[in-house]
Image (cartoon, rainbow, N blue to C red):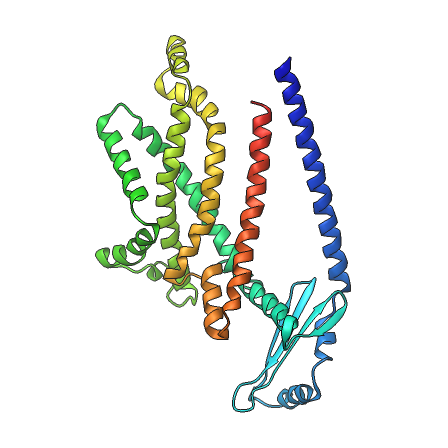
Length: 347
């Protein structure tokens, strides 16, 4: 009776917290919709340019030589517009549009806010292909964990196998990838292996494709991260399987079930729920580990941040990068926390 009441209380608490979270999400969505509706347009921001800039825009309409660089980034709820020229008489004008107003952003807090919008826009890879910014980070993380997890099941089963040769091989694999730095593993896959076998990752794709270098680097990174993830996930799977009471193996034998049937129908279904919390942690760790792809110039959040820093000469670019990583991690931490709570309710 006491356990039943405890479960009932947990269910009510979970429903209440879910309701609160839903209200907060709806309120945030409504606010974003309102801000996007009242946000200023690009033409309205262009009208705020100085007479000098407007004259340059008119002059360049009929000229093949372009001196004025115009950058417009639209986040729907906030917009960024800048005009710049280079040379001895360099010109720089920046504006930020927010909540129906247009603010000068050439100095002070306005400049800081404008830089944050511009840097964040570029890091997110908006209006670019799938291999940019947050999209690349999430794609590489998700695929690495999925492939690594599938491989880890065989590694875990092999490690606890009664066949000593298979057990030793799987144990050696896990020891190797857990005992060496992930960055060095990435270098070996990206640089050493092509050197040994005489091929290039870029050569796997059409050399005329301007994205061939990045696609090749993505494949190399996916292989390195998947192999590394498999080693860590294998220990998670092994620990979950071995945590199931041995009496269930004996009961399965009594019922005439073989090893494969016992694992498939009895042990693994129970172990799966115990794997989820540590696998969620591994996913979150992988999100941060993926930042190592900057070493092979793959355009994730970190690499784009470094590129912007080099071109703009501003170290402020790492602030939005930090916030983006924190937001992504917080979202998945919350999702996984809800998942663990829901599973715990029905244990």
